[in-house]
Length: 359
Image (cartoon, rainbow, N blue to C red; front, top):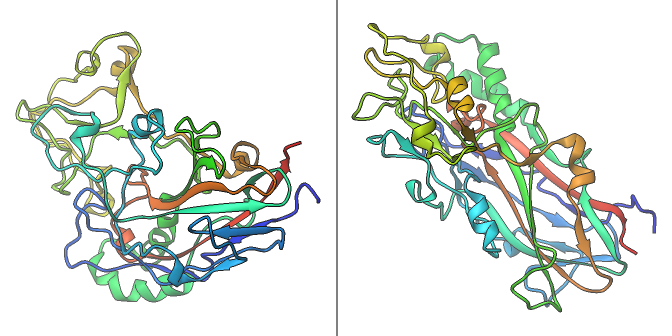
C-alpha cells in the first residue's frame, strides 16, 4: 500500500452550517448569541481496506446522517482548560461555555466557567485497517470553506443592521467566520486494550486557518457596552486560562496602568468583545509589564495546516479497531469569532489519509 494512499473520507462536504439570526446583536459567544445549525453530515470511506463503526460491532464503508449524533444548535465554545481533563485521560473532550460573572478582578480557574453540554459536534468512532499505519488529515481536503453564494445573499438581508459598514466589508466579515472554527481528534484505545492508561492517548486541535497564535485569556467586553469589563474594584477583569512563571499568584503578577480621567472609546463599526474601550477611572491591565512580572497567558495548542500531516498521527494496528472522538466547534477565544457568526454560511470537510506505515 502506498504510504500516501488515502484511506478514509469523513465528508461533511455538502454541509452548510448556518448561523441563525438573532434580533439582538450581542457578543459572539459569551452571551450565547451564535447558533450554528448542521443541515447534513455524510461519512464515507474511500479505501476498501478501511472500515468505520459507531459501536465497534457493525463496521461498514460509510455512515449515514441518521447514524450520527444530532449536534443540535451550535454555540461558540472553547477548548480552554483542556489540560485538566487530558491529565485525567478523560474519554471525551470537555468544552467550556462563555463567562458571565465580572465582579472579580480575575476569572482564570476551570470552575469560573461552566462546561458546555451542547453547542458543538462530537462523536466517538472506530477505525480499522488491514495494515498497521499512522493516519492523519489530508490538509488539501480538510478544513472549512465559506459558502460565498449564501453569504452574498445574506449581505442584503443584514446590511441595514450594519450602517457603518460597506456591503463588501459585511461580506468579508461573513467569510472570515470560518477562521474561528476548529477540528479536534481525541485518540483513545484499541479494541483489545481495556486499560485506563490509554497508551496511545493524545488530543489534537487542528486549525486549518491558523496564521497567528490564539490565547485562552485576555480582557473582554462581554455585553458590548463599549467598555472592557471591570470589577467592583474598578480594575479591568482578566478572563481565561493563565498561570505564572515565577511562583507568584496570577493576581500578584498583574500590573495595572494608572486610570484615565476620561473615557477611551472605539468606533461602533470596530466594536467587538475583543476590541473595546476603557471606562474613565478604571485601571487598565499592562500586559507587557505583567508578562515581564511572570504572567503567562495560555496559548491554544492548535496545529496549523503546514504542520498537521506531520504532527497529527493516529496509530492503527492491523485488523484492530482504534477508538477516536472527532469534534468540530467554534473557538470562542479566536479573535475572528465576532457577531457575524450569527449569519455566516460555510462548509466543513474532513479527509483522513495514511501518513506512514507503522512497521
